[in-house]
Image 1 (cartoon, rainbow, N blue to C red):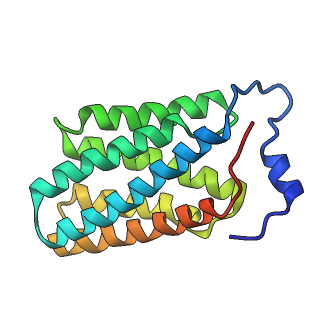
Image 2: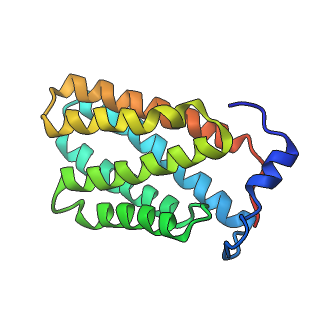
Amino acid sequence: MAKISREELIKHLTPPPGITMPPYPAKRDRVYRTSLVAVAAGMAAAAVAAFLRSGTALFWIQGFVSLGLAVAGWTFLVWLKEWRWVVRSLVILGLVIWPFWSIGGWALTIAGSAIMAAKETHCFHFWAGRVIPWYSVLFGAGMILSAPWWLMGILWAGLAYLWISLVRGRWTLPLFEV
């Protein structure tokens, strides 16, 4: 991450003219960050489960990751209300359909997470956030094409590494409060 000055941080935490933002207390930012830690840990666990070829473990890990992304999506700080609701809709729908349609659930939650990563990068210049949206497309192709277990394990490990890097960068910033 490029070093952000205090002035740049304040600029990013000041809504643009005409934007009304509901309060965003530091406690909510802590919940957001903690949920992203859970997501990254869940993705790492998914890599292990893929290497072990445990479909049952992957099913439950998906629920855990989807729940973490639903919490992150609900506590996501972005100025434009429409984008907040796009992300929230994707991750909530992903969680709701997970038990019934695994690939559809993953598609929605991974898409929502890619938008969150892109927004984090837009504001705070995390290198991983530039890669996550494109990597998510590659990951999705692997799922749709039923890539072999070892390749999905590698793809999961890569996605986990990217998210761990982004989350680590996000934790270096002070808690946000708007």
